Length: 394
Ligand SMILES: Cc1cc2nc3c(=O)[nH]c(=O)nc-3n(C[C@H](O)[C@H](O)[C@H](O)COP(=O)(O)OP(=O)(O)OC[C@H]3O[C@@H](n4cnc5c(N)ncnc54)[C@H](O)[C@@H]3O)c2cc1C
Image (cartoon, rainbow, N blue to C red):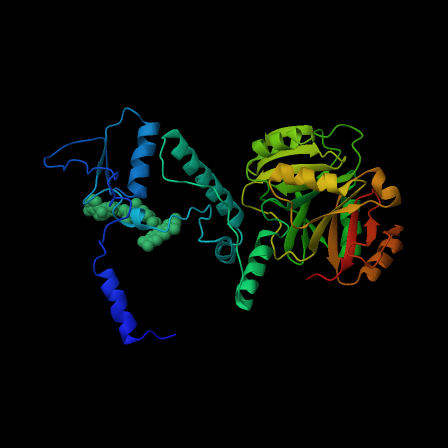
């Protein structure tokens, strides 16, 4: 509603006695001004500006190099400018919101989020370490939509945060097989995937491509790193922010540690565990490289069928602090429950045609209790690597 002349005058009258001083400085218990610098001086490091940037620079320098003589010069009063006048909202986002960051830097958003969280945690630690009483509360945040366009925005944030490949979601698969050429031939024919050696990869891994996107890698189980007799399987990786902390949380919540966190070349750190319902999974604190991208539409959902899906869900929530949004925990039917394992639902244009191609290569196609449900059909390669398939790639 346009403001009337009278309303404008009222506002001006009300503001006429306002003091243009930062609220926290304009209080009896506000910190006194430091003495003026009135003469030449020398130091090891001079920091100009007493806002957050300058004060933190000086603080971190003294912490790292306590013997350095650090001088901070401020032209007015420390904290009188933006640092003393802001809204007081602390957010781990380095990109002014996740949706904004994901739109502009889709390939780097995982790293940006992780760095933002590290930054936020370090900020909180600093307040505790230095006894800074600034009324800090780690309250969390709720996004409320009151209009249809706000609801659309909230939905798009939800899609951004919970796609396969995002933080706290499954983000990669590695097909571990005794027969790399046979596996490649099978899935190329049945699902139309392309297999190619990645010359840039630190171990020259064979990568899998669907519609131009990298969707996984292939490992040869005859390599000496694998114990003899390891059966063919698919390793699925969950993207985590802090692998050591998540591994600790996992074992505290009942997981069994198979491989403690280790450095995987230049690609981050990996750990492998068995969850309390018996499904194997790996954690991956990735470097920003070939994780599943939101645009890789062949990758649809992860499903864990087991006798106690609620127990499984509670475990993943305890380990990650959140339930992966693209994972379904379902009650196992019949023989499914014998060996609980994570399975990927792959979107294909025509599942029946894919099933026919698999049968043409001598493979059976099995069906869950509801063959029309997402991932109701399963097909396996000759050495038993199994995917669920469903119609559609969107
Ligand atoms: C209205 C408002 C609301 C905001 N709300 C939020 C929020 O809710 N959450 C959030 O995270 N961020 C918020 N921000 C942003 C945040 O406050 C700033 O990004 C942050 O304070 C910048 O800190 P700074 O140290 O870089 O700059 P400043 O706080 O501006 O400090 C710079 C200092 O340098 C001094 N200086 C400049 N030139 C010289 C010189 N030649 N010699 C000596 N000293 C000099 C100035 O006097 C000043 O004290 C808000 C900003 C504003 C203005």
